[in-house]
Length: 455
Picture 1 (cartoon, rainbow, N blue to C red):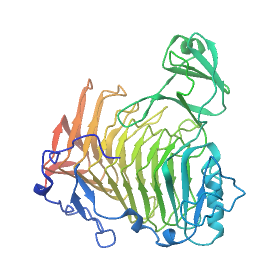
Picture 2: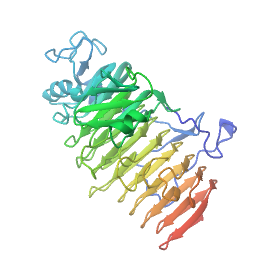
Picture 3: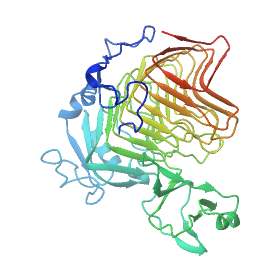
Picture 4: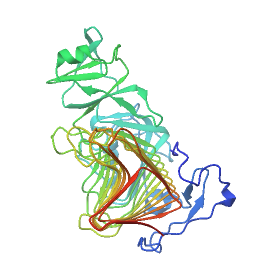
C-alpha cells in the first residue's frame, strides 16, 4: 500500500535519476552491519532494496506448509498439501494450523486462503500461538480477520434505527463509507436509545442489544468490533512474518507482540485497525511490538483507529530493537478516554527509520501525530506528517520530541493547522530535532532544554 501523498521535496516531479540516495544521519545509531538499510529511489520517495522474506529463518520457507481455507477446510484435516496451494486437506481456522505446525517441532508457514475469518478463527481468542519460526501468507487474495461477525442480522426497531443481539460489542463502523485508505467510518455512541433513534450516524448498546442508526437499512454495511483478541502473540519468541492480512479489532491491539526475544518481525502489505477494549482506561494500540531485540520491518501497511496509538514500539528492558517503517500510513488514533494518542511513537532506546510514510493524525483524543520519547532515536525520510485539532483541546501537534530523544527529519513535510490556538509543526520538549531539506507549516515550541537545528 503506497502513500497517497506526494510527500516532501522528493515528489514525483523529481526524476528518479536525479535523486541521490540519502545516508543514515550521524548519531542515529542504526546497526547497519547487522541490519543493512540499502535504499533506492522509487516512484514515490524511496524503497528498501531487500527481500522481506529473506529476513526470517529460511526454514520457514522450506519447512511444512499448513493450509487454511475458511470455506472448505476442516480442523480435523492435516492441513498438508502435495505442494504450496493445495488446499484439498486444509484446516478451517488459523489457530488449528498453529497447533499442527507447532507439533512438527520446526519452522513452518501457514498459507491462508483468501476470505473472511472472524472472532476465534485467528488465535482462538488468544489461547493458541505459534512456538516456532512462522510465516502467515494470504493466498489467492487478501485475508480479512475481524473480531466480530461478517454480516450481523438486523431487525427494524423504529424509523431508521435497527437492532441486533451481540455481546461485548465495543465499536461500530460503517463498511460502506470509507476514506481514501479504505478505512471505515466510525459511528458515535449515543447517550441513550432516544438519542440514537433521533440521530443518524450513531449506535447505542443496551446489554447485548446493539441499536444502529445510519439513516437507512444497515444490512451488509456494519462492522461490529467485539472484546476479542486480535493477532495477539504474548509468548511467541521466534521470527515472525505476515503478508496480505487485514486485521480488524483486538482488545490488546489488532497486532500485539510482547515476548522478550531476539528475533525479526516482518509485516508486508497488511492493515491493522479498530482496536478496542471492554476495560475503561486500558486502551491499546492498533499495532504494538515490545521487547524485541532485532528488526521490526513493516512495509506498505496501514495502522488506523487504534484505541490509543497506531504504531507503537517499546523496548521495555530488552535493548536492541530496530524499527523500519517503509511506505506506511496511519490515521485517527485514540478512542474512548485514552490520552496521549499518537500515529507513530517510539520509546525507551528504540532506533527507528520511517521511509516515505504518511502520518495523518486527526484522532478524537489528545496527542501528537509523531512522538519520539525517552532516549529513542528516529529518522524520518521523505515523510508527510500532519495534524489538526480534532480533539478540540486547542493544540495541533505534528511532531514532538521529548525527554532525551533525538529525531532527524530529511526531505519531509510537516503541517499543523486548523482552529487550534497552538498549531505546532515541531515541538522539542527536552528532545533534539535535526532538520535537512524539510518544510513545515505551523509554529515551533521549544522547552525543557530541547532544541531544533539543521544538520
